[in-house]
Length: 374
Image (cartoon, rainbow, N blue to C red; front, side):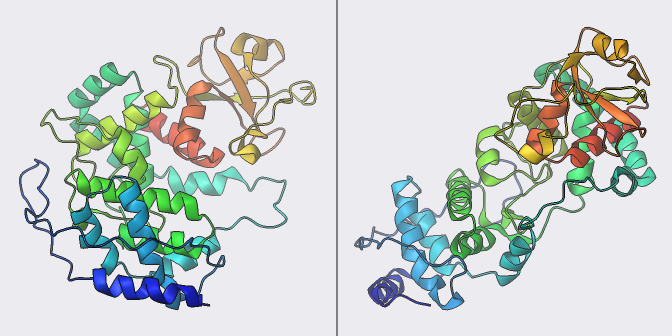
């Protein structure tokens, strides 16, 4: 439904509209410049308080644009960027459909699905082989990144492989259209509006609009960063002075390392190790009494932290000596008692910060071990 009071704002939208200039594609890695000619700032119409229903009718999308323009101005986005992008945004119904499909169940299951099918899909012989090939190809560079950021180089390659199949699948959604559509839809309006503002700031920083392609939810480039993360953490890995996460593998790997470092990665410590649990293990005694504020269902499946030596004393036997007995680790039994368990260090939680899913983080760790042949 469309609020009558928006008619005046819609009229202002027509007055502010204009043809969108086509971005110039530059071959050089240096950040391209925005159009030299900046149109005079048009009269600013005071935006209304925008509060559409959770699933607003598509006919109201045009009336949402003046609000976005006003917010972009408040956040310091250049007027030339605003005029070149927001008036021509298009509602993407497909992005909205995909987002609705991701809503959590009203009655979530307390049981984990078996890990084996997920592992078979995401730790495949093809991903391992291609990862090993790229690991060897980028060995010198990866060693430099590991020395600079302290993050396991094989984990960087595994995340790259898991996220985009080593750069071959990065998404084709127009990010500005997708983010504005999801913000307008309203289920997570503030989150997607903030990411839209970050995408506009990337354009201000010299990233051309045509570069901003990715998933329906806004993840982009080789590392699948959201725009706000790209603004903060993309890194120059090849020393050319330009942090290009869209076409430079060295930059993408350095950017992933930068992310994991800020997420608390501890140098020189493995992510985790598979282990065998005894039938006598008292699981009530090792239950984690803390309630996580982020991803509580994910962390609820972890035990409390003990040293690896203390786990050994309880009869938990690691399958390798990848983690010293003095290191703290929590226990995860993805397939329940009697099946393969995992002792997980704080570095596993850094991977969870990248994508808060136990199966994602386990698959990344296992793929990394296979890539490094350890």
